[in-house]
Image (cartoon, rainbow, N blue to C red):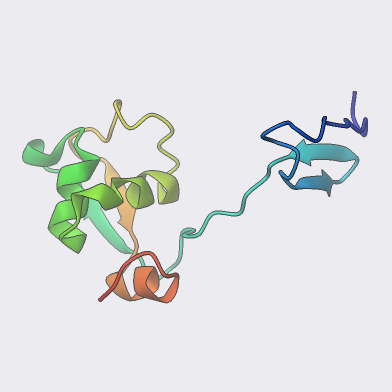
Length: 106
């Protein structure tokens, strides 16, 4: 199946989705993360009051609970409902990095 090209009908909602060749594989709709881990990130140890709540942690650092997804992506948390546990160490991108990426207005 690797390397097989798929033609979508022009009326498909995915007809304009980018297709990339990664090695010998064809990847459909690959996107590059806006925010990736960086040495400038803060390291945060989850206290009992913040366990499982990425929105509370995002609100604490950014003043915007809706940026929970930034913390999830940088820490490869795939299911936000199963968030960090007490004592987990999380990378928290700085406000300056988010502003430079156009994610947050500082």
